[in-house]
Image 1 (cartoon, rainbow, N blue to C red):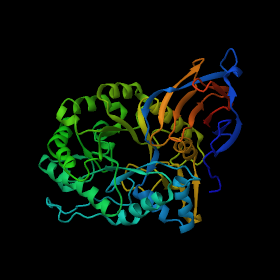
Image 2 (cartoon, rainbow, N blue to C red; image 1 turned 90 degrees about the vertical axis):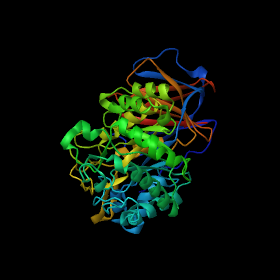
Image 3 (cartoon, helix red, strand yellow; image 1 turned 45 degrees about the vertical axis):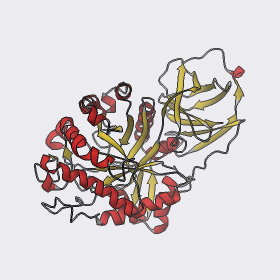
Image 4 (cartoon, one colour; image 1 turned 60 degrees about the horizontal axis):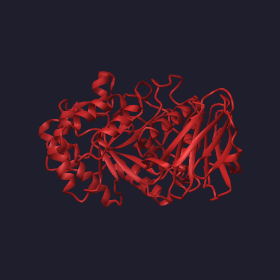
Length: 477
C-alpha cells in the first residue's frame, strides 16, 4: 500500500513524468524543465521520435476511467481486516490513489457473485410486490460504494447494468441465456426503474445504465456461454425501448439518467446500432453505446469513429478483464506486464477513437480469480486479495489504469496528436479541467526511445526517455 500517487503540483516551468514497465514496476517519477521549442532536433529517427500536440484541436469530451463494484469485489473487500480493506479502497479512490472517476454496478447478480439471484424471484409477480434489493446489495455494494464516494474528491459517476431478468420471465425459465418473453416487457421496464428508485433511497444515483449485459455474445458463442443473461436481438430491444422503457424512463424522476445500448463486443457494434437506430422513435431515447473490449484485437477501432459520425451518440467502454482465452498462461498471473500492456494499448486505442471512458471489470478478486458463481470460470484482476494473509497485491493492470485515471476527468478533452516518424509507439493527448495537458506514451518495442513532446500552442517542448515496454505519462501546465 506504500506506493501512493500524489497529484503533481501545478508548475509552468517543470513537467512530471510517470513511468511503469516490466523493469520498473509500480509508479516511478521523474521531473524536468520545460524547454523552448527551439530546442527540438532538426530531424528524427526510429529511436528519436517527436509527438506533436495541438491543444486547440479538440475531439471528444471525456468522462473518465474506472472499475466495477461486483459482488465478488465487495466479498473480497469484506474478507480483509477493516484496515486492509480501507487501504484497498484508498488505493482506488483516494487523492493519493488511482482516483477512479467511474464505476459500474451490476443490477442484481452478475457472473461474479457468490450465487445467482434477481430482485424478484417470485414467479408471476408482475406487480413487483415482492421486489426487494438483495443481501448482497446491503453487504457488498451500497456500503462500499458509499465509502468510495466519501473517500473520493471527485464526483464518482455510477453506471448500472442488469445481467438477467427473473427466470420466470424468460423463454428458458432459467438464469442461463434465454430471451425475455414479450408479455413481460412492461414488467421488465418497471423493474429497472424500481432498481433506480431503491438505490436512490440508499443515497445512490446513477449517471447512466445499459439495457442488458452481453445480449449478443451467447448467440455468437452458443452453449459454451454460461453466464446469467438475457439474450436480445436488436429489433426486439428496439420494441422494448420504444414502447416500454423509453417512455417510462423519460416520464420518471430519472429522466436525466442516460440510457445505453449494446453492452457487448465491438465486433457486433455496427450491425446492432444500425438496426437500433433505424427507428427514429427509438434513437431519441438512446443516449449512448456501451462496448466491451473482448473482440478488440479482431475488429477495427475505426468502427467506433464510423458509428459516432453516423449517430452522434456517446461511446463508452464498460468492461475489460483478462480471461484464459485471451492469455492462457494461468488464471491469476501476479506481476504480468503482458496483461498490463494489453490494457495500455487498448485504452489509448479506444480513447483515440471516440470512446469517452474505459471501465475495468472486477476491481479486486481472490487468488483464484473469484469468487465466481457461474461455470464460465474465474479471471484475473488489477488487485488480488489474499484473505488468509490479510493482504492484497497490485498487478500491472492496476498501475496502467492509474496512469489514465489520475489525470483524465469529467471535462477532459482528447486533443490532436501526431508522431514523427510514424512508428509503433502509441500515444494519446488530453487537456484537463485544471488546465494541465497530459500525454500518454506506450513503447511496445524492445529498445529505449527518446521522445520529444512538442506543444505547438505554447511553443514548448519536453524530452523524455521511454524505456522498452513502458507506459509513460507526462503532465505539464
